[in-house]
Image (cartoon, rainbow, N blue to C red; front, side, top):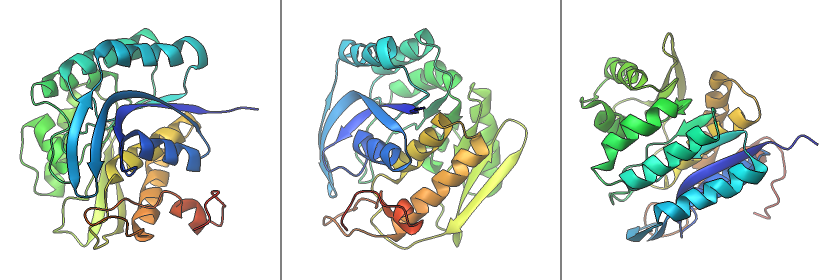
Length: 274
């Protein structure tokens, strides 16, 4: 039996909507065996992040070694990395194990506004991790931080995508969820040569906690199964659209998305009884 595997290196979200919890749910729904290396434990819910407890670099490295030394992986996703020290440790381990299919979600700010990446770590992210990225998936605010430019149009996104490629990433998806001037949510994929657009209906809901994590995790799962980048992004777009459409209405703040909605929409049982 050919079991495909994916490793998420990210923070834990106690509310289950984002972080490694969202990643593992997404991997499972897309038929990939999920593994994890925790970079931080957060105390959070739909109202915000109450506390962040980062792991030591030794603890992060040891978790990655446990996977790399035994099970291996077909794709890697990074999420919340918190500090420059953790970023360097993760980058060194990715290089050591020669993992090539690396999806970098440059998590910086939680949905409620809490910082999830120290400001001094941004340069480390650009210097050490982005050159290892097969795909990097910034939203518009994250792309602005990575490139040092304001992004107010599709043309701006194209310029930002080129700048991120210049930092060493092989492919970049600049997500369009934050651009509420457009009637559709337009994600822009750039492979260093061509631009591709992925459009979906913009949904008016506050329940979007974990959308970035889920989207990049879906890309990771599809890459682990052998999909090319265009195919992986296309499936991830459908996955996250379904997850947002099938609102769960959990919590009083920014509620989570529905990770089993994609399979339910396709008539595939995910083991839930909802």
